[in-house]
Image (cartoon, rainbow, N blue to C red; front, top):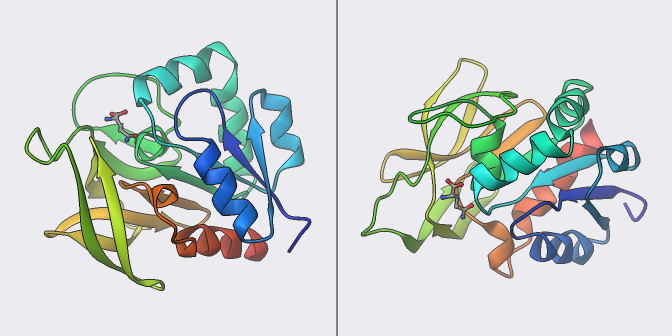
Length: 191
Ligand code: GLN
């Protein structure tokens, strides 16, 4: 397990906390700042932050095609919050650069002002009870046939998987719980 390298896209957003969770599992976490660094990693996390900013920087640094090729080669990609928006095929409103790797539609800032940031107890398929931190979170508005919903909150889809792609609307790196990162590590080991 020690030799598995997981990259965290390090253009903007919550990078360090993901790397700490990866290292807590005994794997190696790498901050990815250039597309060629994708060659050295077995899986990629796209962190939370601002999806418009991350998307623009991905265009500027030639990451869009590079991450698409990475995912299409079967390598696991996990998007949290803004990263979930970037992995989506469509967003409910607006127009911004997207990777479009996963057959979901995301709605940005979907929980509105009253629920700008909040915590909720989820029951995640394959993981169990999980305390989730949502920050100006998107939700999953619609999913395609091949997509499995892993968690809902108030009947709203907030975590899903489609083969090598995993998304969560919340931030698992902001709690001490490493089980979602372990789930992603298992996906990488199976790939
Ligand atoms: N609201 C942000 C966006 O739309 C996502 C927030 C987050 O990643 N915590 O990009």
